[in-house]
Length: 236
Image (tube, rainbow, N blue to C red; front, side, top):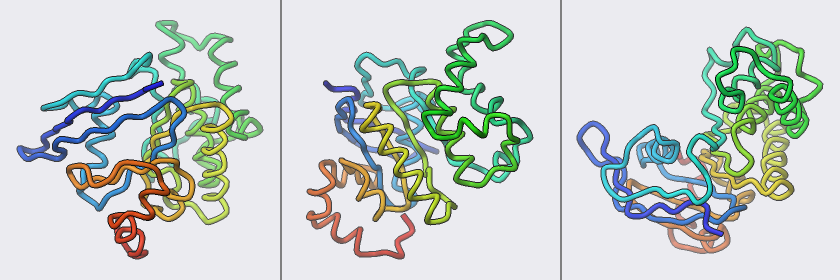
C-alpha cells in the first residue's frame, strides 16, 4: 500500500529553486536512503516532508498518516549532546502530542516512552543523565524519542554522523530491526553512502531534481550509482 506520494514537487529557497519537479512514491514498510551532493536539496526535501517548508509547486500526499504522526530524528548539535536532562525526560519530549493538553505526563505516556526505550535497547539508561551517555547511546535514546510520535514512519537525518564504527553498525542494525520486525517505513539521509546502500531497499538520488529513484540493486548497477559510489572521498 502506498504510504507517501510526492508529485512534481518544487520548493524555492532564497528566491531560487532548491527542488524542481521531484516525484517518487513509497510503500508502507519501505527503507529509503536519500543521497546527493551538498546543496542538492536533501535538507529542503526533509523539511517539505515534515510540513516545515511549503511546496511552491506539486504535492506531498500521505495515505493514512498525518504529518504529526511522523517520527523525526534530526542531526545532533554539540549543545544537544550536552543536554542536562535524564534519558526519560528526553524521550518524554517526543510524547507531547500523545499526551494531549495535560500539564503532566500520564502513566500511559510514560509507559509508551519506556516501551520505546526497550525497543531501541536503551531501557537500562532511563534514569541516567543524557549528556553523560556515549554517542551511540544518545542516538538510541533519540530514536526512542522519535518512535513516541509514530508507529509508521521514521525520518532520520544523518543518524550515524560522528559515531565510531561499532556504534554505527549497531545503530544500522537497530534501524533494520525497526523496519523489518516492526514494519516501520524508514526515510534516511546519510553521508555514509556505502553502508547506507547496503542497508536500504531503495535509493533516492537528487541534485535539485530527480537523478535516480529505485531499488538499491538497480542503483548500484546504474551509471549514476556507479559514478557516485566510486568516489569514496565524496562530500555527500
